[in-house]
Image 1 (cartoon, rainbow, N blue to C red):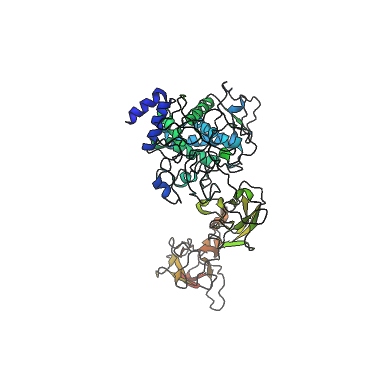
Image 2 (cartoon, rainbow, N blue to C red):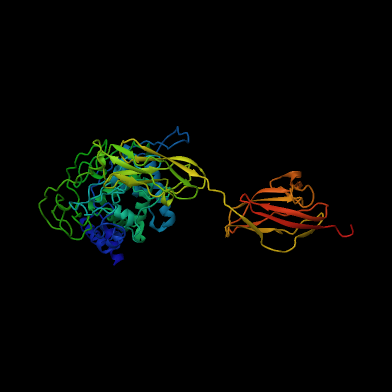
Length: 597
């Protein structure tokens, strides 16, 4: 059956009839969309089965220019920064966004070489979904400067998906929205993968999976496109992958047109200088995917939108009626494969999020700075309250807590920043913070994502670990310690165990001294057994050392002393071991005269 299906696709994937087959097959196949079972794991409301990656949201319908882009050219390149090429403006890709696509394709190529994922396909989808992250409006880490949000997935022309992430990614506590430069719905990002763990990925190696980061989103999209053993060099697999992202024939054609355009040649442009698309399919509001894009023209496109996307199903092609305002297929018959005819009717305009938009102030909660002992968790977490201009609490506003990268402290998942939505009382609390192993002070910053409210700073101090204690020292062997004058004692001849209140004392500091036998005031001996300085070099390596400091017990409270040497003196000598907590152990070292002396 799979072979027959693939042959049909090769005969003409762009035709309306074939698109119907593809759409129907998506429902029956195990295409990697958010299933009811996987979404139910940890989500408040599971999306319909086979919901597209972007939830069937609106998308940009601009087509590439008909002329071929010129190859990159820069005869004055100095080797610093991106090579800026020449050619049609639409062939220019923002430097960070382009790097993310290439990095994702390389990573997928290493883990799944049979997929043959071209980075230009990711660029084609990124163009249609978000206009290349709003023309490359990202920071140095690849995170969008403002959240890119699709309209509410309320079932009116889109999938119906009630809130599954508590507003964590989209700032919406009622319904889900597609988020980020590759427009993942939160349930698919978090738990909509084939194993129930979600398609979310860490593409830039910072230890977190953020759909608002273009490196993370591009890698997640690449893995999705390659799922199910697809070979994207085969037209049928390529079409299925794109249609699983958004089940529309027109969407398929639009992505493929950009894919072909980018394969002919591209060049880098500075971040924020990418060309912004202006046309959008008939499903979105003026905000479209961006949830209110700033600085973008958004005039409506007057051509007929594509068929195949249905209310409630997110465009899964299950044979439900066309959604309102979506006329028939491109063949001019007014029919959509698997659907019904009907007169287009106006549909309600999805409302953009209101609560996060009103945020004007972040207010610190709690006056005390934070502190913890090295290697332990902070007892309290940074906490802020979001307020509007009238001083009222703002719910559902995303707040980002950021640590300086120079500190060893980390949030869960080894993350240096986390984004948390405010609750119904306007409170955002960072997850548990763990201190690093080094003492010192640093500052935690809380910022409102996509808002101009002043940041809030929290002072944090990491205290050094207290020195481990040891109140008793014992030898682990009762064997007599003997050596001949001028020679050394056996290797590791002296081993002791340190304990504190009857328990082993790992990491306890011990001082070892060769002392005289004066019972009242023993002093460091200037003759007899000695150590050698382990840090000395040259002639100093053989110089006698009769006091060693900085010795510590291992994880089991054990300490083996370094090798002990002897001079020409014979007799019984004393080795004294002490700790800061008053533990004292005196050991006899017997040195015999050489034979025949």
